[in-house]
Image 1 (cartoon, rainbow, N blue to C red):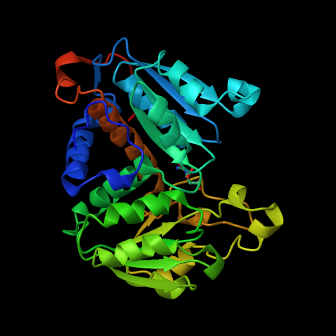
Image 2 (image 1 turned 90 degrees about the vertical axis):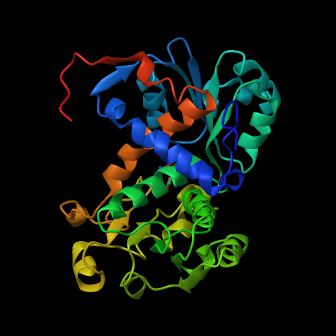
Image 3 (image 1 turned 45 degrees about the vertical axis):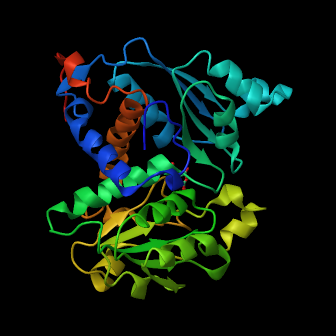
Amino acid sequence: MDFTGAHILSINQFERSDIERIFEVADAMEPYALRRKATRVLEGAILGNMFFEPSTRTRVSFGAAFNLLGGEVRETTGFQNSAITKGESLYDTARVLSGYSDVICMRHPEEGSVSEFAAASRVPVLNGGDGSNEHPSQALLDLYTIRQELKDRNRGIDGLRIAMIGDLKHGRTVHSLCKLLCLFQNVQVTLVSPPELAMPEDIVEKLREAGHDVTVSEELTHSITHVDIAYSTRIQEERFKSKEEADLYRGRFRLNQAIYTQFCEPNTVIMHPLPRDSRADANELDNDLNQNPNLAIFRQADNGVLVRMALFALVLNVADQVDKYAHPVTWYSGR
Ligand code: NCD
């Protein structure tokens, strides 16, 4: 695809070569993300960061990624701080805000809302999550992490064995990740959830059409015995009719060090898009895994900066100029 000026709304828009290009640019961003160098390539550019649902990682890492490229960030968070509460349409909001920004990232609780907004925007729009639908930048950073974690083991994305665990019905990260895996070959996917929270049938169908081996299970321990990646997810409480309904599923798939030691192959990589629910009745990934070197969740979150820098550099067409505007950093960096 031609990235210049493109909206990034869904994994459906990518081919495998696009993913390779994004990862190649993300690799080149490492010295900047690690503060070994700084660049002013986006000096003067403005990111409109519009988050109408709670967000820590996605919002801050999109902002940090833009700052690391030398640009400025203007943020709107929550409906209460926006004229949308006065009845303004997404169309009008997009027309106006795209006049103030060079690129916009948006998260919104309704499926399809970010695409609707993008259709009216005069600048590229990046989907930071639209309801239960998609979260393309998260899937890209997840796949980038999988590639990095498996690199030293002579394993890659083709031939991957992955278990996705938890709320697969509402989890937009796993929806996008499954679509992304369809661009690769020979993937074994085990989908672990209660039947009520199963992966949507159209996505399962897509995985099968891609020739992947899909197993559906309700049971955690036997599903993680022969996988490269155990990808846990949070029960998406905010998508349920009531907290009580979400509570029915909380804590069903707890993973801790004892279970890991007993059931997983050594070196199975543990991932989670975060936030993990660490309340006592949930404990999706127990704190006793924090010392496990295969707990990749914080490396995964760090990779979000690289991948989001790559997306900005590509859609604003500066990927090949980043180094030209580089300069050394002068401050202490503990990294
Ligand atoms: C996810 C999201 O918002 O979809 N978080 C994230 O962006 N890293 C997952 C979640 O909230 O459970």
